[in-house]
Image (tube, rainbow, N blue to C red; front, side):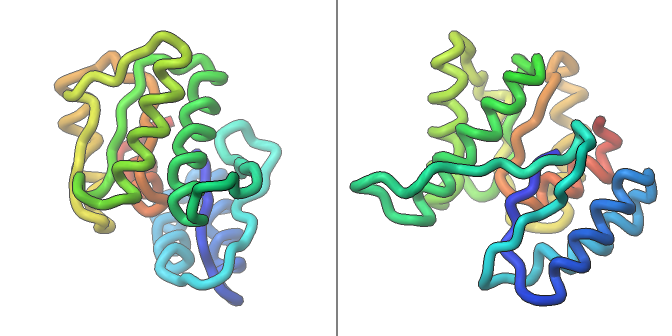
Length: 173
């Protein structure tokens, strides 16, 4: 479960509270705390440092020439997260994300597909689910995805909030 959350001031406390609750198995408290933190924005904070293999923070590289900050972050973040899943032995991946026409969604999908291709893996169309940037989308998407494709062994979510609720309400490990 990887976080890259933009937060301000007191959001750090919510992230820590959510991380602890998640690791303790208190999923309702984790969901409430993480929703509060994710809804805040402006400055970047390091999120959810833990020795647990289930939670981590990925660090990217500096902005290369020709890229704009947010665009590079979306593309690179997807590549890093996908690489992390592959390194963990996951190879039958799915992608749950926001609206298909959004630049961030496109860049994240392109980054994921590029990383998979480097490892000789394709991302089948039925393993990409587009939806709203909403609190319920992660929860809503996981059930049908795993029902129609039970071989999925890893999910890259297009946002922290989608990931939180996919894990918390989808009973993923």
